[in-house]
Image (tube, rainbow, N blue to C red; front, side, top):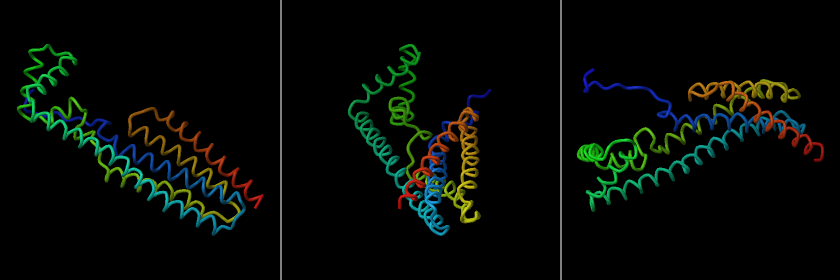
Length: 233
């Protein structure tokens, strides 16, 4: 096979950034909104109050998730830029020592010292900063932080997840919200766990069971607290 021919493979690691934000957002949207609806409904409030609480939870949660994800990933991005800037200065001040450092990394990975020095020299001739960012700092185009992408994915996923129990609550009679919202939410959580595991290449049944267990626990706790508070107020 010709060396110039590029062989491309699709790996899960290339999707980890947006996948993590999307799965977290959808899970949080579905679980927090369904729990909020169940808690308010268990307090024997009106159908309108339940829907207002659900819509408010969707809007506030989506904005909060997007903002939180943006701030978190921006901090990671700032750290990456600071490390790259430091590496750029070190390359300009002492390129020889940086080449030795890069060669040492390749020796630790299994190359003999002469070959490691040759590889380090050629890579630094091609792109010195890129070589050090990738092999010394672990920063590459695939793994580097993308705050806007993460924020949009998280906020949109939260909205989609939150809309499912809200639509079920809208379609349900005022005195029969709890059961259909609970069933629909648990089914959607299981499906979401399967989809996330399949996309990420992990065990689907384990992911579904894990998500459903914690989702059922959260909804039961919220419904119980809502019932107690509703009886006392």
